[in-house]
Amino acid sequence: MITFIIGGARSGKSRFALQLANNYISSKEGVHGGDAISSMRKAYIATAQAMDDEMKERIKKHKKERPGEWTTFEEPLNISTLISDIHKSYDIILLDCLTLWLSNLMLNNKDVEAETESFISSLSTIHCSLFTVSNEVGLGIVPDNALSRRFRDLSGYLNQKMAALADEVYLVTAGIPLKIK
Image 1 (cartoon, rainbow, N blue to C red):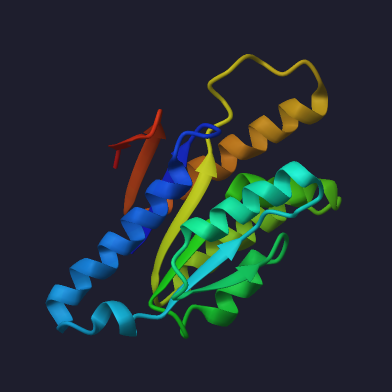
Image 2 (image 1 turned 120 degrees about the vertical axis):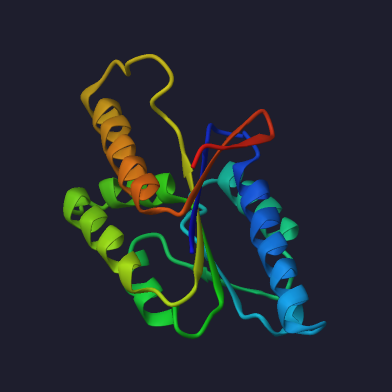
């Protein structure tokens, strides 16, 4: 099962994704008996990089919100490879977030289109539940420079591909989730 959570900056999408993943685990507990929640193997892939003090604080806050039973992988670039390497070892993977991954690719002069296609195609072979978070950046004004417009367009393309592949899609705004697929 693939679940895609999208929303604006500070919309509550990461908190909702973690809540949704934990609710999924709890639902499995009822199916498999009382110890399922403690026995499910949970991986959290964080794409953020702490390049300044403000981002360090954001990352610290996200870590505090995440229960200790989640194994965290900090991977800013090679998420396709990481997912391919770990998907059989975990019951759930929560990936947060695709737009930070995209900006990391752009800043490192990677072929974003090829990386996006590789990522999307790698998801067809996973053997675990995946919860993926991304920002919706296309609802505002048209950016005034080519780099920002390229980022917005690539984000929209990536989000469309992810939403098409996902079994469930949620839009989070002002802390309120809305199931759209």
